[in-house]
Image (cartoon, rainbow, N blue to C red; front, side, top):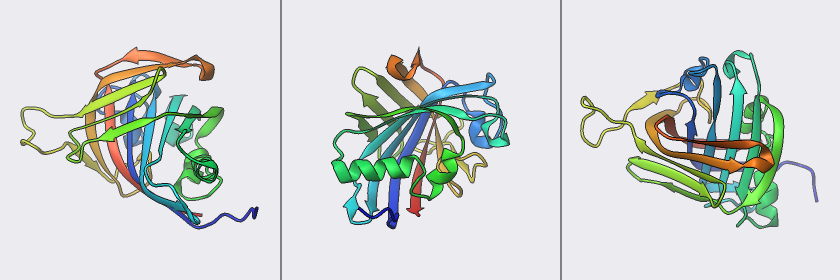
Length: 214
Protein backbone atom coordinates (compact mmCIF):
# COMPACT_ATOMS: atom_id res chain seq x y z
CA UNK A 1 0.00 0.00 0.00
CA UNK A 2 1.32 3.43 -0.90
CA UNK A 3 2.19 5.72 1.99
CA UNK A 4 1.17 8.78 -0.02
CA UNK A 5 -1.77 10.66 1.48
CA UNK A 6 -4.68 10.88 -1.00
CA UNK A 7 -6.81 13.94 -1.47
CA UNK A 8 -9.70 13.88 0.95
CA UNK A 9 -12.73 15.90 2.05
CA UNK A 10 -15.02 15.70 5.06
CA UNK A 11 -17.98 17.93 5.85
CA UNK A 12 -20.77 17.60 8.36
CA UNK A 13 -21.87 18.39 11.89
CA UNK A 14 -19.82 18.89 15.03
CA UNK A 15 -20.96 19.67 18.54
CA UNK A 16 -19.58 19.60 22.04
CA UNK A 17 -20.98 19.36 25.54
CA UNK A 18 -18.57 20.48 28.25
CA UNK A 19 -18.15 21.45 31.89
CA UNK A 20 -18.09 25.21 31.21
CA UNK A 21 -20.97 27.56 31.91
CA UNK A 22 -22.94 28.96 28.95
CA UNK A 23 -21.27 30.25 26.86
CA UNK A 24 -18.09 28.19 26.96
CA UNK A 25 -15.18 30.72 26.98
CA UNK A 26 -12.88 28.34 25.08
CA UNK A 27 -14.48 29.19 21.72
CA UNK A 28 -13.56 32.82 22.38
CA UNK A 29 -9.93 31.75 22.99
CA UNK A 30 -10.28 32.47 26.70
CA UNK A 31 -9.61 30.32 29.76
CA UNK A 32 -12.35 27.80 30.71
CA UNK A 33 -15.05 28.79 33.23
CA UNK A 34 -13.42 27.02 36.19
CA UNK A 35 -9.89 27.02 34.82
CA UNK A 36 -10.38 23.60 33.25
CA UNK A 37 -12.59 22.12 30.54
CA UNK A 38 -13.83 18.54 30.34
CA UNK A 39 -16.24 17.34 27.70
CA UNK A 40 -17.37 15.41 24.65
CA UNK A 41 -16.66 16.40 21.05
CA UNK A 42 -18.95 14.71 18.51
CA UNK A 43 -18.49 14.56 14.73
CA UNK A 44 -20.85 13.34 11.99
CA UNK A 45 -19.54 13.15 8.43
CA UNK A 46 -22.44 13.95 6.10
CA UNK A 47 -20.23 13.86 3.02
CA UNK A 48 -16.65 12.70 2.76
CA UNK A 49 -14.12 10.85 0.65
CA UNK A 50 -10.59 9.70 1.37
CA UNK A 51 -9.18 8.97 -2.04
CA UNK A 52 -11.75 6.52 -3.45
CA UNK A 53 -13.13 5.61 -0.01
CA UNK A 54 -16.51 7.07 1.00
CA UNK A 55 -16.86 8.37 4.56
CA UNK A 56 -20.53 9.32 4.27
CA UNK A 57 -22.56 8.84 7.44
CA UNK A 58 -19.69 7.88 9.76
CA UNK A 59 -19.38 9.21 13.32
CA UNK A 60 -16.54 10.01 15.70
CA UNK A 61 -16.58 10.98 19.38
CA UNK A 62 -13.73 12.36 21.45
CA UNK A 63 -13.46 12.76 25.22
CA UNK A 64 -11.22 15.61 26.27
CA UNK A 65 -9.75 17.34 29.33
CA UNK A 66 -7.41 20.28 29.67
CA UNK A 67 -6.49 22.88 32.28
CA UNK A 68 -5.78 26.48 31.35
CA UNK A 69 -6.19 28.43 28.11
CA UNK A 70 -5.41 25.92 25.38
CA UNK A 71 -5.41 28.58 22.63
CA UNK A 72 -2.81 30.68 24.47
CA UNK A 73 -0.37 27.77 24.51
CA UNK A 74 -0.70 27.33 28.28
CA UNK A 75 -1.65 23.67 28.11
CA UNK A 76 -2.45 20.65 25.97
CA UNK A 77 -5.39 18.28 26.12
CA UNK A 78 -5.78 14.66 27.15
CA UNK A 79 -7.98 13.02 24.50
CA UNK A 80 -9.54 9.61 23.82
CA UNK A 81 -11.14 8.91 20.43
CA UNK A 82 -14.04 6.59 19.68
CA UNK A 83 -14.59 5.78 16.00
CA UNK A 84 -17.63 4.33 14.25
CA UNK A 85 -17.56 0.53 14.36
CA UNK A 86 -19.59 0.41 11.11
CA UNK A 87 -16.51 1.56 9.21
CA UNK A 88 -14.85 -1.10 7.07
CA UNK A 89 -11.08 -1.60 6.97
CA UNK A 90 -10.43 1.21 4.46
CA UNK A 91 -12.80 3.60 6.22
CA UNK A 92 -11.19 2.87 9.59
CA UNK A 93 -7.77 3.67 8.14
CA UNK A 94 -9.12 6.91 6.69
CA UNK A 95 -10.75 8.01 9.96
CA UNK A 96 -7.60 7.22 11.91
CA UNK A 97 -5.44 9.19 9.49
CA UNK A 98 -7.76 12.21 9.50
CA UNK A 99 -8.51 12.41 13.21
CA UNK A 100 -4.90 11.91 14.31
CA UNK A 101 -3.90 14.72 11.96
CA UNK A 102 -1.63 12.47 9.90
CA UNK A 103 -3.67 13.20 6.75
CA UNK A 104 -3.17 16.97 7.05
CA UNK A 105 -5.98 19.50 6.87
CA UNK A 106 -7.45 21.24 9.90
CA UNK A 107 -7.06 18.21 12.19
CA UNK A 108 -3.28 18.37 11.73
CA UNK A 109 -3.40 21.71 13.55
CA UNK A 110 -5.89 20.39 16.10
CA UNK A 111 -3.59 17.43 16.83
CA UNK A 112 -0.92 19.87 18.00
CA UNK A 113 -3.20 20.72 20.94
CA UNK A 114 -3.20 17.10 22.17
CA UNK A 115 -0.62 16.26 24.80
CA UNK A 116 -1.87 12.88 26.02
CA UNK A 117 -3.41 10.23 23.76
CA UNK A 118 -5.72 8.00 25.82
CA UNK A 119 -6.43 5.64 22.96
CA UNK A 120 -8.64 5.05 19.95
CA UNK A 121 -11.47 2.52 20.02
CA UNK A 122 -14.14 1.38 17.56
CA UNK A 123 -17.66 1.41 19.04
CA UNK A 124 -21.31 1.85 18.00
CA UNK A 125 -22.11 5.58 17.82
CA UNK A 126 -25.52 7.18 17.31
CA UNK A 127 -25.56 10.82 16.23
CA UNK A 128 -28.60 13.04 15.70
CA UNK A 129 -29.01 16.72 14.86
CA UNK A 130 -32.28 18.49 14.09
CA UNK A 131 -32.33 20.15 10.68
CA UNK A 132 -33.48 23.40 12.32
CA UNK A 133 -30.73 23.06 14.97
CA UNK A 134 -33.28 22.89 17.78
CA UNK A 135 -31.38 19.98 19.34
CA UNK A 136 -28.49 17.56 18.91
CA UNK A 137 -27.33 14.38 20.62
CA UNK A 138 -24.92 11.45 20.50
CA UNK A 139 -24.61 8.15 22.32
CA UNK A 140 -22.20 5.27 22.76
CA UNK A 141 -24.27 2.59 24.50
CA UNK A 142 -23.13 2.08 28.08
CA UNK A 143 -20.43 4.75 27.81
CA UNK A 144 -21.59 8.16 26.60
CA UNK A 145 -24.92 9.99 26.52
CA UNK A 146 -24.87 13.65 25.51
CA UNK A 147 -27.71 15.86 24.35
CA UNK A 148 -28.50 19.56 24.11
CA UNK A 149 -31.29 21.92 23.19
CA UNK A 150 -30.75 25.23 21.42
CA UNK A 151 -30.25 28.17 23.77
CA UNK A 152 -33.19 30.54 23.89
CA UNK A 153 -34.60 33.28 26.07
CA UNK A 154 -37.18 36.05 26.32
CA UNK A 155 -35.44 38.21 23.68
CA UNK A 156 -34.79 35.39 21.20
CA UNK A 157 -37.23 35.59 18.26
CA UNK A 158 -39.28 32.40 17.79
CA UNK A 159 -37.44 29.83 15.70
CA UNK A 160 -34.20 31.84 15.70
CA UNK A 161 -30.87 30.57 17.02
CA UNK A 162 -28.29 32.22 19.24
CA UNK A 163 -25.12 32.21 17.15
CA UNK A 164 -21.50 33.38 17.11
CA UNK A 165 -19.66 34.22 13.89
CA UNK A 166 -15.92 33.83 13.25
CA UNK A 167 -15.13 32.67 16.79
CA UNK A 168 -11.39 32.97 17.57
CA UNK A 169 -11.30 29.56 19.23
CA UNK A 170 -13.52 27.55 16.88
CA UNK A 171 -12.84 23.85 17.40
CA UNK A 172 -13.42 22.93 13.75
CA UNK A 173 -11.55 25.71 11.95
CA UNK A 174 -11.93 29.35 10.90
CA UNK A 175 -14.91 31.12 9.38
CA UNK A 176 -17.57 29.15 11.24
CA UNK A 177 -21.06 29.77 12.63
CA UNK A 178 -21.57 28.38 16.13
CA UNK A 179 -25.08 27.75 17.42
CA UNK A 180 -25.36 27.79 21.21
CA UNK A 181 -27.18 25.20 23.26
CA UNK A 182 -27.68 23.99 26.82
CA UNK A 183 -26.88 20.40 27.75
CA UNK A 184 -29.86 18.28 28.75
CA UNK A 185 -27.65 15.22 29.28
CA UNK A 186 -23.90 14.83 29.77
CA UNK A 187 -22.98 11.40 31.12
CA UNK A 188 -19.71 9.55 30.55
CA UNK A 189 -18.64 6.22 32.01
CA UNK A 190 -15.41 5.21 30.31
CA UNK A 191 -12.95 4.03 32.98
CA UNK A 192 -10.78 2.32 30.35
CA UNK A 193 -9.74 5.79 29.14
CA UNK A 194 -10.01 7.41 32.60
CA UNK A 195 -13.04 9.60 31.90
CA UNK A 196 -16.19 9.64 34.02
CA UNK A 197 -18.76 12.32 34.91
CA UNK A 198 -22.48 13.07 35.10
CA UNK A 199 -24.01 16.53 34.81
CA UNK A 200 -26.39 18.70 32.77
CA UNK A 201 -27.25 22.34 32.24
CA UNK A 202 -23.80 23.37 31.03
CA UNK A 203 -22.54 24.71 27.71
CA UNK A 204 -23.01 23.10 24.31
CA UNK A 205 -22.53 24.37 20.78
CA UNK A 206 -23.02 23.08 17.25
CA UNK A 207 -20.71 24.05 14.37
CA UNK A 208 -20.72 22.67 10.82
CA UNK A 209 -17.28 21.61 9.58
CA UNK A 210 -15.79 21.45 6.09
CA UNK A 211 -12.26 20.07 5.84
CA UNK A 212 -9.94 19.12 3.00
CA UNK A 213 -6.49 17.57 2.88
CA UNK A 214 -3.72 16.90 2.73
